[in-house]
Image 1 (cartoon, rainbow over the protein chains, first blue to last red):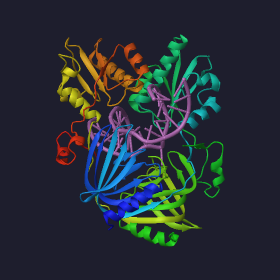
Image 2 (image 1 turned 135 degrees about the horizontal axis):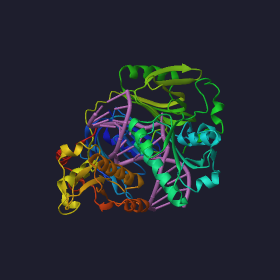
Image 3 (image 1 turned 180 degrees about the vertical axis):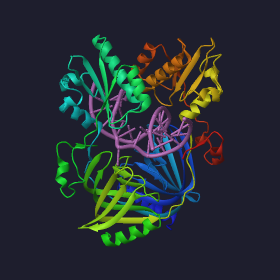
Image 4 (image 1 turned 90 degrees about the vertical axis):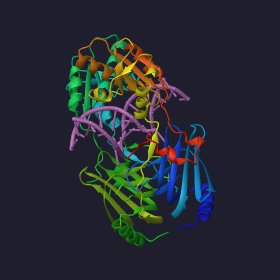
Length: 253
Length: 253
DNA sequence: TACTACATCTCGCAT
DNA sequence: ATGCGAGGTGTAGTA
């Protein structure tokens, strides 16, 4: 168990050095901003990253209980607590963490220039359809990338074998009502902007919910079962990581 | 700098005790499951919670770079690395973290029975309108909660001053195209299930995007500017935290 | 900046 | 288990 005053000194030093900080502690937390919250005393993990991202994690669950991005952080001893005040002045938000006990404290200047390379997202799925238009149907002709991008968020856009303009919405997971509505919006937008009465709408996804399929058919649209590609198979060849540097892997910020 | 073998021993012991674990380390990570990813070597924070939630955090940003919930975790020395293999057999997912150096290691049996109490969410906003129907317009009569919920996800549902059935969709933030389509879907559902030709649709939110407002009016719906209530003001009375135990505060799991 | 849609979304709730 | 929608969503991409 560390003294609060000792922790305060370590914390101030680590903040000045833009280190990444981890504190295991007994604390309570108050948030005011977009919403307002209170969390009573319990044992948690407080993370402060080098970019002043603050995350308060309880011992279960994937999401932080409280958090703040780009915070101005001020630490002080307040009564019997180590108060860590995190503020985003621009967003008018504040998170106060009152630490009663410190179980452990660690800080380190973590250096990391790598970015995650990810395969299997929706972008790759639409690229896959563009490269393999026969997945939709024989004779499907996608529009050029230039013409395509003029219409904004539509995933895939082209002419079917009968030269009917066709809008395709891709989902990498099971499509629901929201996906059908999204497709509907794009089809209506294209109809009105091009002055067409007939535009085909296709929802391409590995699966679709029952209600969504009913709604899809109500609108005269179609479902096409397509699985999102994972272009690199690490499970079969784990030692050859250069596979990950393939052009197909997309960097994520 | 800790020996990998020493860290492995500490880790195994902490896992057996269901402690929450933090490791500051140089590592690379591979993920295969819903998607597939690779992250080259860099200095990061690896968290393992008592419920086997695994989070790999880079030194910037709010979200973890890699993660896994309910993982089966096996640690071992593999070549020159401490390999932490996290698997979700049911979801057929795997995350491998190869640790090359350990900057620090901490574990503790964090005990926490508290739940976040949150105010200012969408549920509170619709409750607020139900309690103050004049916010929509004089003479607006909400239906009872029972009758209301029979129609599913509609936020607020009632009769306007002219006894026209009215569907209200609430958003606690600026409403976009998706909110308009959601309202549209509910109005259409009510029309068809009740056999009505005229149902009013109102989008209640603090703000709305330009395109969303155009689309809203195209459908003959209305926008009503309403701010989500934050019922408890902690900023004015920070020391009186019993305010947070008010019936208005909702517990979040 | 505002707007739009993705996400290995996560999470809770209802069926 | 599945479906559905909220989230203090965060984040990237684009106009």
